[in-house]
Image (tube, rainbow, N blue to C red):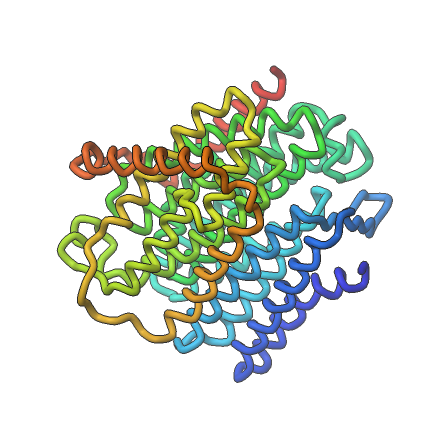
Length: 475
């Protein structure tokens, strides 16, 4: 198993460059790599004990592969497969597929890291590959958005790297477990880096512009899997170090509520989805023990929604009320929206119920409010007009079939959620959300300020988050 794991990690990085040398095989090689990841992820669910690889004992470079990793890796594989299928009949070059597969491999690597230095390397490769994909159209706008992303990412990783050095100084190891003996400054610095990379709370306000302005398939990758590379180590640390768990849960609640408030009042479809991503990432942190299942549910639904949003007649909700979409596209939109809202028969229902079951008492009210907010957000999509309209290109449907099938099939992974009490609860939550949408928010003309999203304020927000984290750790 050790040899298989090492080969699996190396395969995307090796074939990523082979793709560039054999451009006629680019799509086929890329899809083959992703299918290998699907197989690797699925077999992890049959292993009860985690696989631990210590590559450099003196430095504590450790890889840990378990069911938690399996959920995140499966999410990465399915979303990347859908993006490749989506781009199959487009004019995307071998360079695009090369960067997509390098991104896929480095994201996989981040999901099995259990030490800060190997995670740092994985996150830096992810940052470079994501930058190149965002800038792929080579327009002035895309290059600016990509550079903005790279600047924020690299600044966040400077905070992180200093914290990692302090952990090593205290423990002579970079292992995640070393946080229990690390100085408070180390915890704060590492967390501000990961919170920023993961799009958490105020330090994640770089995310709406980046995800909404990227090309459709890139937006699906960023929101579906890439931001989760900042979430995964936070979850892993919370599970390994008891003192970290309350901090992670607090940020989870704050992020879930902050994101949903912004998303409720947003008038642009892609920005709404991006802001909702912030909120949904908070759901991953409120119950670290079951974050993997929620990551899968969110990744499948959100990548589906971004791919659909790229094929809508307009990005403006008000304009969409006068431009009906065709019925098949609307059905796909409704299915993904219902899943992320927590409706039964989709994986989002089990994920939401499992998460709410594992929150602590002080989180319960806030997360139920967050669930209602999510229903309000996706009511904006569900109740858009539909009918006879221009058909989307045929190649749009293979990725839709893959993702929507996964949304339904994965619902059986937590079949225990299907109780009368749970079904009643979620129907009430969604019903209240839809009612609030029609009575209050559909007529709302409020627009929340975007001042904290501006480039000149992003680093200042990071500094404030660092001070907040220091206070929380000391407390």
